[in-house]
Image (cartoon, rainbow, N blue to C red; front, side, top):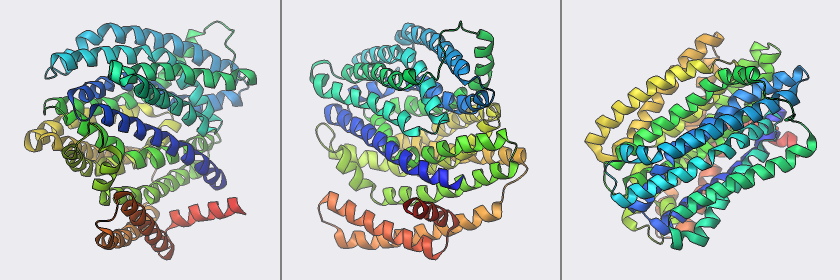
Length: 503
């Protein structure tokens, strides 16, 4: 288990880093062309609902298909099972695509009544274009889940990079002619290219049987597992949409500040959080398949400590460098210095949501492995009510700054509830081990923070990029040294795997 986690981590983190860099470049392109104008607000708001379905299919499929596909392979019917899910998913995705395109003209004015007429028109047509992608996303999601089941995580990431790069190139080519529509049309082209890329890999290997007639009974049985998982992901997007709706009432630019800050601050979660949770998922699935409870619980504990080890220093480091980072990435073209200040203020308040949701990624993988996704769905559904309440209270008090604060507070309660339920379900975890390692990691981050604050005083006034690089290097050195001296178990675990791989 340890060696596999270490090997897969190196490959998957590298691919995920490329994905997040390409996503950051996309945001930089949007900021350059549209700044914090109503055009950017309309595009970003329009993407929320289609993206809810995209993540519903993509992440939900991975969490549901990986354990069920591994089980079908054990029964020597992996090809047939994968083919049934592939065909059934295409049909269902096509129906969702048509419905979404039809209701978009009614939905956008209803969700964002404070948008001006042109912004509403942009949001409506961008939504229609994104809904046209859903049919291809349905097929893509099945093949990405298949790659994950075979521990070929980087292939899924590469296919997602294709989609983002297509959006970026379309913006460079057509943004001055057709505005925000260029990004949406580029995304549509990217989903088609991504599907072709996967089929070139899958078809020659003959790992999927699509010739048989659809067995709706088997498809229905799979979707009984999939729906709670997918809906849980959708609930997360509903919570995001709640924030965007409240932001749309806070004046022009608020939606843009929320989006850029969230994407930047959540980058460590997307790189490390999702990576670690995804890599341990097949290992947890195999532990459940062979009924090895101890291995399952140790896998969860190792995932939680490793997550905290890589996440906390990354997030704290970003917070200390946040004004520099936002200036570096976004402040050019139509994105002004005032927009940088506003985005920075929002970013600070997203800290809690990054930490808690990243840790919860590991806990949720445990639920999904045990096919208890419906429990997360119940907890997630309750979180929507808390999120609406927190947004209402804090947005009234702090304006758009209350939206990230509400997200962080909601993340804390959501993660705490999931942890309590999961611990009761598995009969306990080794909290003494967890708390001891968490304390050591936190102390190491405190040492790092002190060093960073001292260095920032010395390099103030240097060129922005040079200041970021120097501070990051110093922070990394002090954190690694402190974690080693404190003998944090998660750090030593990663160090052993790295040295084994080199050996």
